[in-house]
Amino acid sequence: MIEFARTELGSKLAENDRRGSFAKGDWERCGARGVLGCHVPEEYGGAGLDAVSTVLTHEAIGYGCQDNGLTLAIGGQTWSVQEPIVVYGSDEQKRRYLPPLASGEWIGCHGVSEPEAGSDALSLRTRAVKIAGGYLLNGRKSYVGMAPLADLALVLANSDPAAGKWGVSAFLVERGAEGFRQSEPRPKTGTRTNPFGDLVFEDCFVPEENLLGGEGIGMSLFTQTISWERAFIHAGHLGAMTALFERCLAYARERRQFGRPIGDFQSVSNRIADMKVRLETSRLLMYKVAEMKDAGSDAAIECAMANLHIAESLLECATDAVRIHGARGYLEEHGVERQLRDSIGGVIYAGTSDIQRNLIASLLGL
Image 1 (cartoon, rainbow, N blue to C red):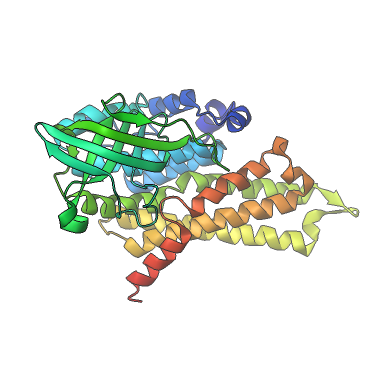
Image 2: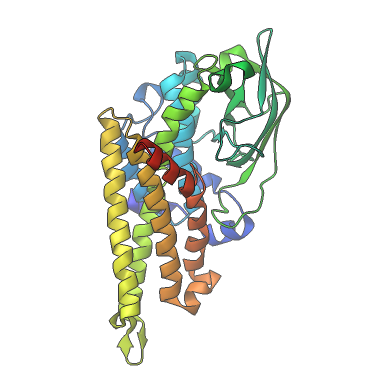
Protein backbone atom coordinates (compact mmCIF):
# COMPACT_ATOMS: atom_id res chain seq x y z
CA MET A 1 0.00 0.00 0.00
CA ILE A 2 2.92 2.35 0.66
CA GLU A 3 4.27 1.74 -2.83
CA PHE A 4 0.82 2.38 -4.31
CA ALA A 5 0.62 5.71 -2.46
CA ARG A 6 4.14 6.71 -3.52
CA THR A 7 3.74 5.89 -7.19
CA GLU A 8 0.08 6.59 -7.93
CA LEU A 9 -1.00 9.37 -5.57
CA GLY A 10 -0.04 12.99 -4.99
CA SER A 11 1.67 13.70 -8.31
CA LYS A 12 0.10 17.19 -8.50
CA LEU A 13 0.16 17.98 -4.78
CA ALA A 14 2.04 21.28 -4.92
CA GLU A 15 -0.20 22.60 -7.68
CA ASN A 16 -3.38 21.36 -6.02
CA ASP A 17 -2.32 22.89 -2.71
CA ARG A 18 -1.78 26.30 -4.28
CA ARG A 19 -5.10 26.14 -6.14
CA GLY A 20 -7.09 24.51 -3.37
CA SER A 21 -8.04 21.64 -5.67
CA PHE A 22 -9.08 18.13 -4.68
CA ALA A 23 -7.33 15.22 -6.44
CA LYS A 24 -10.46 13.44 -7.70
CA GLY A 25 -8.35 11.05 -9.79
CA ASP A 26 -6.40 10.00 -6.69
CA TRP A 27 -9.68 9.52 -4.84
CA GLU A 28 -10.94 7.21 -7.57
CA ARG A 29 -7.67 5.28 -7.56
CA CYS A 30 -8.03 4.82 -3.78
CA GLY A 31 -11.54 3.52 -4.35
CA ALA A 32 -10.40 1.07 -7.00
CA ARG A 33 -7.60 -0.14 -4.70
CA GLY A 34 -10.05 -0.77 -1.85
CA VAL A 35 -8.79 1.98 0.46
CA LEU A 36 -12.17 3.70 0.78
CA GLY A 37 -14.03 0.50 1.54
CA CYS A 38 -11.67 -1.00 4.11
CA HIS A 39 -14.19 -0.98 6.95
CA VAL A 40 -17.29 -1.55 4.81
CA PRO A 41 -18.74 -5.10 4.85
CA GLU A 42 -17.98 -7.17 1.77
CA GLU A 43 -21.65 -7.58 0.83
CA TYR A 44 -21.83 -3.81 0.32
CA GLY A 45 -18.72 -3.45 -1.80
CA GLY A 46 -16.07 -3.16 0.88
CA ALA A 47 -13.20 -5.27 2.15
CA GLY A 48 -14.71 -6.02 5.56
CA LEU A 49 -11.45 -5.27 7.40
CA ASP A 50 -11.26 -4.73 11.13
CA ALA A 51 -10.32 -1.39 12.69
CA VAL A 52 -6.65 -2.29 13.14
CA SER A 53 -6.24 -3.23 9.49
CA THR A 54 -8.12 -0.14 8.35
CA VAL A 55 -5.94 2.13 10.49
CA LEU A 56 -2.79 0.49 9.12
CA THR A 57 -4.03 1.03 5.57
CA HIS A 58 -4.80 4.72 6.17
CA GLU A 59 -1.45 5.17 7.90
CA ALA A 60 0.34 3.64 4.91
CA ILE A 61 -1.44 6.03 2.52
CA GLY A 62 -0.40 8.99 4.69
CA TYR A 63 3.19 7.78 4.76
CA GLY A 64 3.49 7.21 1.03
CA CYS A 65 1.47 10.22 -0.14
CA GLN A 66 1.93 13.62 1.47
CA ASP A 67 -1.49 14.92 0.40
CA ASN A 68 -2.95 15.43 3.85
CA GLY A 69 -6.20 16.76 2.41
CA LEU A 70 -6.73 13.48 0.59
CA THR A 71 -6.02 11.36 3.67
CA LEU A 72 -8.31 13.60 5.71
CA ALA A 73 -11.10 13.04 3.17
CA ILE A 74 -10.52 9.28 3.31
CA GLY A 75 -10.72 9.22 7.09
CA GLY A 76 -13.69 11.56 7.22
CA GLN A 77 -15.79 9.52 4.82
CA THR A 78 -14.77 6.20 6.40
CA TRP A 79 -15.66 7.08 9.96
CA SER A 80 -18.27 9.88 9.83
CA VAL A 81 -20.32 8.84 6.79
CA GLN A 82 -19.86 5.15 6.00
CA GLU A 83 -19.65 3.92 9.60
CA PRO A 84 -23.01 5.47 10.62
CA ILE A 85 -24.63 3.90 7.55
CA VAL A 86 -23.07 0.51 8.39
CA VAL A 87 -24.32 0.71 11.99
CA TYR A 88 -27.68 2.47 11.61
CA GLY A 89 -28.65 2.11 7.97
CA SER A 90 -31.42 -0.09 6.63
CA ASP A 91 -30.53 -2.81 4.14
CA GLU A 92 -31.88 -0.59 1.38
CA GLN A 93 -29.74 2.37 2.50
CA LYS A 94 -26.65 0.21 2.73
CA ARG A 95 -27.21 -1.21 -0.75
CA ARG A 96 -27.82 2.23 -2.24
CA TYR A 97 -25.06 4.26 -0.61
CA LEU A 98 -22.16 2.08 0.55
CA PRO A 99 -21.06 0.63 -2.83
CA PRO A 100 -20.60 4.01 -4.62
CA LEU A 101 -18.89 5.47 -1.56
CA ALA A 102 -16.55 2.50 -1.19
CA SER A 103 -15.68 2.49 -4.89
CA GLY A 104 -14.80 6.18 -5.02
CA GLU A 105 -17.62 6.92 -7.43
CA TRP A 106 -19.26 9.10 -4.76
CA ILE A 107 -17.88 11.47 -2.14
CA GLY A 108 -19.54 11.76 1.26
CA CYS A 109 -19.52 14.50 3.88
CA HIS A 110 -20.88 14.87 7.40
CA GLY A 111 -22.89 17.99 8.27
CA VAL A 112 -22.96 18.66 12.01
CA SER A 113 -21.37 22.04 12.81
CA GLU A 114 -23.30 25.25 12.23
CA PRO A 115 -22.47 28.97 12.43
CA GLU A 116 -23.68 28.98 16.05
CA ALA A 117 -23.06 25.33 16.93
CA GLY A 118 -19.44 24.23 16.65
CA SER A 119 -17.96 22.55 19.71
CA ASP A 120 -21.49 22.52 21.15
CA ALA A 121 -22.49 20.46 18.14
CA LEU A 122 -25.91 19.42 19.36
CA SER A 123 -27.15 22.97 19.93
CA LEU A 124 -28.07 22.93 16.29
CA ARG A 125 -30.72 25.07 14.66
CA THR A 126 -31.26 23.14 11.44
CA ARG A 127 -34.88 21.98 11.54
CA ALA A 128 -36.57 18.96 10.01
CA VAL A 129 -40.35 19.22 9.78
CA LYS A 130 -42.34 16.09 9.04
CA ILE A 131 -44.62 16.32 6.00
CA ALA A 132 -46.33 13.77 3.79
CA GLY A 133 -43.74 11.33 2.47
CA GLY A 134 -40.73 12.84 4.19
CA TYR A 135 -39.25 15.95 5.81
CA LEU A 136 -38.47 19.55 4.97
CA LEU A 137 -35.02 20.66 6.10
CA ASN A 138 -34.11 24.28 6.75
CA GLY A 139 -30.78 25.54 8.05
CA ARG A 140 -27.08 25.78 7.31
CA LYS A 141 -24.15 23.50 8.09
CA SER A 142 -20.72 25.16 8.18
CA TYR A 143 -17.06 24.16 8.23
CA VAL A 144 -17.81 20.90 6.42
CA GLY A 145 -14.91 19.08 4.79
CA MET A 146 -15.66 18.04 1.18
CA ALA A 147 -19.00 19.89 1.26
CA PRO A 148 -18.55 21.59 -2.14
CA LEU A 149 -17.92 18.27 -3.90
CA ALA A 150 -20.03 15.81 -1.92
CA ASP A 151 -22.52 13.53 -3.63
CA LEU A 152 -24.03 12.55 -0.28
CA ALA A 153 -24.34 14.48 2.97
CA LEU A 154 -25.16 12.90 6.31
CA VAL A 155 -26.95 15.71 8.12
CA LEU A 156 -28.12 16.11 11.71
CA ALA A 157 -31.26 18.19 12.19
CA ASN A 158 -33.71 18.88 15.00
CA SER A 159 -36.94 17.07 14.24
CA ASP A 160 -38.52 17.54 17.69
CA PRO A 161 -37.22 20.58 19.63
CA ALA A 162 -39.37 19.75 22.66
CA ALA A 163 -37.48 16.47 23.11
CA GLY A 164 -34.13 18.19 23.62
CA LYS A 165 -31.15 16.10 22.58
CA TRP A 166 -33.47 13.18 21.87
CA GLY A 167 -35.20 15.21 19.19
CA VAL A 168 -32.20 15.17 16.85
CA SER A 169 -32.45 12.97 13.75
CA ALA A 170 -30.03 12.05 10.96
CA PHE A 171 -30.77 12.34 7.25
CA LEU A 172 -29.03 11.25 4.05
CA VAL A 173 -29.24 14.08 1.52
CA GLU A 174 -28.13 13.56 -2.07
CA ARG A 175 -26.55 16.16 -4.34
CA GLY A 176 -29.21 17.78 -6.51
CA ALA A 177 -32.03 17.44 -3.99
CA GLU A 178 -34.52 20.28 -4.34
CA GLY A 179 -33.75 23.05 -1.86
CA PHE A 180 -30.20 21.75 -1.17
CA ARG A 181 -27.27 24.00 -2.05
CA GLN A 182 -23.52 23.41 -1.61
CA SER A 183 -21.28 26.45 -1.25
CA GLU A 184 -18.11 27.21 -3.12
CA PRO A 185 -14.89 26.21 -1.28
CA ARG A 186 -13.85 28.57 1.51
CA PRO A 187 -10.11 29.36 1.54
CA LYS A 188 -8.29 28.13 4.61
CA THR A 189 -4.81 27.83 6.12
CA GLY A 190 -4.06 24.16 5.58
CA THR A 191 -5.32 20.88 4.07
CA ARG A 192 -6.26 23.05 1.10
CA THR A 193 -6.72 19.99 -1.09
CA ASN A 194 -9.75 19.09 1.04
CA PRO A 195 -12.39 21.66 0.01
CA PHE A 196 -14.17 23.26 2.95
CA GLY A 197 -17.65 24.75 2.70
CA ASP A 198 -21.28 25.03 3.75
CA LEU A 199 -24.43 22.98 3.19
CA VAL A 200 -27.56 25.11 2.85
CA PHE A 201 -31.12 23.78 3.20
CA GLU A 202 -34.09 25.88 2.12
CA ASP A 203 -37.26 23.81 2.28
CA CYS A 204 -35.17 20.86 1.16
CA PHE A 205 -37.36 17.80 0.76
CA VAL A 206 -35.84 14.57 2.08
CA PRO A 207 -37.88 11.40 1.51
CA GLU A 208 -38.78 9.35 4.54
CA GLU A 209 -36.57 6.46 3.36
CA ASN A 210 -33.55 8.76 3.76
CA LEU A 211 -34.09 9.08 7.49
CA LEU A 212 -31.14 7.23 9.03
CA GLY A 213 -31.91 5.02 12.01
CA GLY A 214 -35.32 6.46 12.92
CA GLU A 215 -36.48 9.72 14.45
CA GLY A 216 -34.60 10.88 17.53
CA ILE A 217 -31.63 8.58 16.95
CA GLY A 218 -29.29 11.46 16.07
CA MET A 219 -27.83 11.81 19.55
CA SER A 220 -27.00 8.12 19.80
CA LEU A 221 -25.63 8.09 16.25
CA PHE A 222 -23.46 11.13 16.91
CA THR A 223 -22.15 9.83 20.23
CA GLN A 224 -21.31 6.38 18.91
CA THR A 225 -19.85 7.25 15.55
CA ILE A 226 -17.95 10.39 16.60
CA SER A 227 -15.73 8.17 18.73
CA TRP A 228 -14.58 6.33 15.59
CA GLU A 229 -13.84 9.59 13.82
CA ARG A 230 -12.23 11.08 16.91
CA ALA A 231 -9.84 8.15 17.29
CA PHE A 232 -8.94 7.38 13.68
CA ILE A 233 -9.28 10.61 11.67
CA HIS A 234 -5.55 11.11 12.25
CA ALA A 235 -4.43 7.71 10.94
CA GLY A 236 -3.27 9.17 7.64
CA HIS A 237 -1.58 12.03 9.46
CA LEU A 238 0.24 9.49 11.61
CA GLY A 239 1.82 8.18 8.43
CA ALA A 240 2.69 11.75 7.42
CA MET A 241 4.31 12.28 10.84
CA THR A 242 6.46 9.21 10.28
CA ALA A 243 7.62 10.48 6.88
CA LEU A 244 8.32 13.92 8.34
CA PHE A 245 10.40 12.45 11.17
CA GLU A 246 12.47 10.37 8.76
CA ARG A 247 13.04 13.42 6.57
CA CYS A 248 14.20 15.51 9.53
CA LEU A 249 16.50 12.74 10.80
CA ALA A 250 18.16 12.42 7.39
CA TYR A 251 18.51 16.19 7.08
CA ALA A 252 20.07 16.46 10.55
CA ARG A 253 22.69 13.91 9.50
CA GLU A 254 23.42 15.45 6.10
CA ARG A 255 23.21 19.21 6.66
CA ARG A 256 26.53 20.61 7.90
CA GLN A 257 27.25 23.87 9.68
CA PHE A 258 30.46 24.93 11.39
CA GLY A 259 32.08 21.83 9.91
CA ARG A 260 29.68 19.40 11.63
CA PRO A 261 26.30 17.75 10.92
CA ILE A 262 23.60 19.87 12.54
CA GLY A 263 22.45 16.75 14.40
CA ASP A 264 25.60 17.13 16.52
CA PHE A 265 24.08 20.23 18.08
CA GLN A 266 21.89 19.49 21.06
CA SER A 267 19.24 22.03 20.10
CA VAL A 268 18.63 19.99 16.94
CA SER A 269 19.14 16.51 18.36
CA ASN A 270 16.70 17.22 21.20
CA ARG A 271 14.01 18.16 18.69
CA ILE A 272 14.65 14.94 16.79
CA ALA A 273 14.38 12.95 20.05
CA ASP A 274 11.11 14.67 20.94
CA MET A 275 9.71 13.92 17.49
CA LYS A 276 10.54 10.23 17.91
CA VAL A 277 8.84 10.05 21.30
CA ARG A 278 5.71 11.79 19.99
CA LEU A 279 5.58 9.53 16.95
CA GLU A 280 5.88 6.25 18.83
CA THR A 281 3.45 7.19 21.61
CA SER A 282 0.94 8.37 19.00
CA ARG A 283 1.23 5.13 17.05
CA LEU A 284 0.89 2.93 20.13
CA LEU A 285 -2.13 4.86 21.37
CA MET A 286 -3.94 4.64 18.03
CA TYR A 287 -3.23 0.91 17.72
CA LYS A 288 -4.47 0.35 21.26
CA VAL A 289 -7.75 2.13 20.53
CA ALA A 290 -8.21 0.15 17.31
CA GLU A 291 -7.73 -3.12 19.18
CA MET A 292 -10.22 -2.01 21.84
CA LYS A 293 -12.79 -1.08 19.18
CA ASP A 294 -12.35 -4.46 17.49
CA ALA A 295 -12.93 -6.11 20.86
CA GLY A 296 -16.27 -4.29 21.23
CA SER A 297 -15.25 -1.61 23.71
CA ASP A 298 -16.54 1.95 23.29
CA ALA A 299 -13.05 3.11 24.39
CA ALA A 300 -14.48 6.59 25.01
CA ILE A 301 -11.63 8.03 27.02
CA GLU A 302 -9.00 6.34 24.87
CA CYS A 303 -10.56 7.81 21.69
CA ALA A 304 -10.38 11.30 23.16
CA MET A 305 -6.82 10.72 24.33
CA ALA A 306 -5.77 9.52 20.88
CA ASN A 307 -7.29 12.54 19.17
CA LEU A 308 -5.70 14.97 21.60
CA HIS A 309 -2.25 13.42 21.68
CA ILE A 310 -1.86 12.72 17.97
CA ALA A 311 -3.18 16.11 16.84
CA GLU A 312 -0.93 18.05 19.19
CA SER A 313 2.05 15.78 18.49
CA LEU A 314 1.71 16.36 14.75
CA LEU A 315 1.55 20.12 15.22
CA GLU A 316 4.62 20.10 17.48
CA CYS A 317 6.54 17.83 15.11
CA ALA A 318 5.69 20.01 12.11
CA THR A 319 6.83 23.11 14.00
CA ASP A 320 10.09 21.39 14.91
CA ALA A 321 10.55 20.28 11.30
CA VAL A 322 10.40 23.89 10.07
CA ARG A 323 12.93 24.96 12.69
CA ILE A 324 15.26 22.08 11.88
CA HIS A 325 15.20 22.98 8.19
CA GLY A 326 15.58 26.69 8.86
CA ALA A 327 14.99 28.93 5.82
CA ARG A 328 14.41 25.86 3.63
CA GLY A 329 11.61 24.80 5.92
CA TYR A 330 10.02 28.22 5.51
CA LEU A 331 10.00 28.05 1.72
CA GLU A 332 6.99 26.59 -0.07
CA GLU A 333 9.10 24.73 -2.61
CA HIS A 334 10.42 22.21 -0.07
CA GLY A 335 7.01 21.16 1.29
CA VAL A 336 7.92 21.33 4.99
CA GLU A 337 5.86 24.46 5.60
CA ARG A 338 2.84 22.73 4.04
CA GLN A 339 3.05 20.05 6.70
CA LEU A 340 2.91 22.76 9.36
CA ARG A 341 -0.10 24.43 7.73
CA ASP A 342 -1.85 21.09 7.35
CA SER A 343 -1.24 20.12 10.97
CA ILE A 344 -3.01 23.16 12.43
CA GLY A 345 -6.48 21.88 11.59
CA GLY A 346 -5.87 18.68 13.52
CA VAL A 347 -6.32 20.46 16.84
CA ILE A 348 -9.74 21.70 15.65
CA TYR A 349 -11.62 19.06 13.65
CA ALA A 350 -13.36 16.01 15.18
CA GLY A 351 -13.47 18.07 18.38
CA THR A 352 -10.91 20.67 19.39
CA SER A 353 -8.07 19.78 21.72
CA ASP A 354 -9.80 21.80 24.43
CA ILE A 355 -12.98 19.76 23.98
CA GLN A 356 -10.97 16.54 24.14
CA ARG A 357 -9.44 17.64 27.44
CA ASN A 358 -12.88 18.49 28.81
CA LEU A 359 -14.18 15.10 27.70
CA ILE A 360 -11.25 13.22 29.27
CA ALA A 361 -11.76 15.12 32.54
CA SER A 362 -15.49 14.37 32.49
CA LEU A 363 -14.89 10.66 31.90
CA LEU A 364 -12.52 10.70 34.86
CA GLY A 365 -15.35 12.00 37.03
CA LEU A 366 -14.13 15.60 37.28
